[in-house]
Length: 154
Image (cartoon, rainbow, N blue to C red; front, side, top):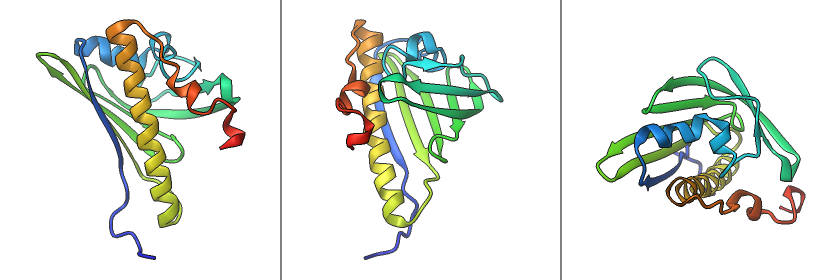
């Protein structure tokens, strides 16, 4: 077994063919985000205010701390499994390029890598769901369908 020489970082990126203000809002406004990610939220993302996200189909909730909001540019949260998640929104002529980076994983090297791989997969689902909702008004149920028998079966 080899020790890690660099901490893993999970990254998922995708073009969403909508204006940056609309895409950014989709991640800060739970009325939109619940269409493609979690099922309930204690409120809109605001810097300095903790928010609880709930995935009712799994009986799971987490509280995250919103550490930074730069409208139409960047969102940073802490507490996502003891890691930091950063969304970056880059306007383009054909829409908005969204990049999600998750870092600061805890545990031994194997645990960090496993968590980073799972995070990459999860955020890829989130971006695909956001794209389907924002561009086509379709709810794909990607998060709910990942574990159709519940989290206990994973």
